[in-house]
Length: 236
Ligand SMILES: *Cc1c(COP(=O)(O)O)cnc(C)c1O
Image (cartoon, rainbow, N blue to C red; front, side):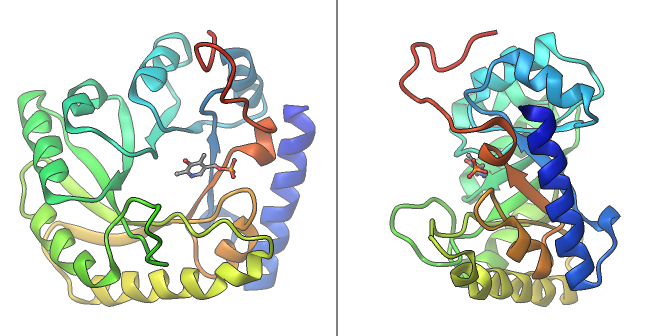
């Protein structure tokens, strides 16, 4: 199933790139494997996937230990400060930085472990009460403050758009965060580049690509529906 799903997702990515006049190489597909067992990740790996996204630190660590070393692990979930230390040198990119206190902890742990950590700032672009992330207005301040910390590098923005039936409804939010990213990029802040725009999930990644996503996070579209009720949530 993973193989067929990947083929379909790949075709749809390519079609969206063609519509937008973008090169396929500008878009990185992150396979969101949360709750899914290791054999399914191995299958995706076998078909060329090297970027995986997880939202729980312990689950990412467990999978990190048993899967090939050339995988890039993306932390996409809400992150507690006391778990940051486990990610050092293992998370390729932390997408979900939404406070200065969290950025400070990532910086402090990065210094301690003598690593450099790349982060994105998570923006709640639609202002939904149910979502993590900061407002568009606060973003510039957090980007600037985080960039001044040692051993941490701000690489761009991430957003989780609203869950909608019609992905066209999210186009306006993707446009907004793209504009925010360009505005901040133009300010040429030290230690900040705005090259990464992480947006678009199974329901809306084609629209996100049309609006400039550089990284899309696709779970269900590759691995199928998640079952959160299964005991232990996932097995090795
Ligand atoms: C689960 C998750 C995804 C993937 O969602 P799908 O709708 O299954 O593609 C993407 N981004 C984040 C932050 C997630 O938590």
